Image (cartoon, rainbow, N blue to C red):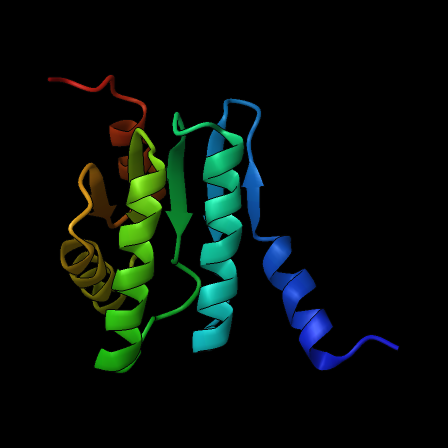
Length: 135
């Protein structure tokens, strides 16, 4: 019989996929625990590795207002920093919730990774994500 944890893991797995255009998609549909944040980051890491460091990532946090403790945000920033070492082209995060955008911006800044921006809408995020990199 499936445990509650098994069900949560399957729920998270459905929310990380690689699109036909090679974009890594992440959709957070509810407030998730610190343990689930780690599991989600593990799935993102696998996706980035599968794409060989050439990924663009679109992260949808619009379904929930993310409110986490400073310790959880710090741990998330440390994990995200390690994702940056794998390699990716660009990352776009979007949410209509100002608190979620602010926390996401903090995590991105604290991680020290570059080429990741936070937007209010999916349209804005996709427009930026699909623009060629300029050097």
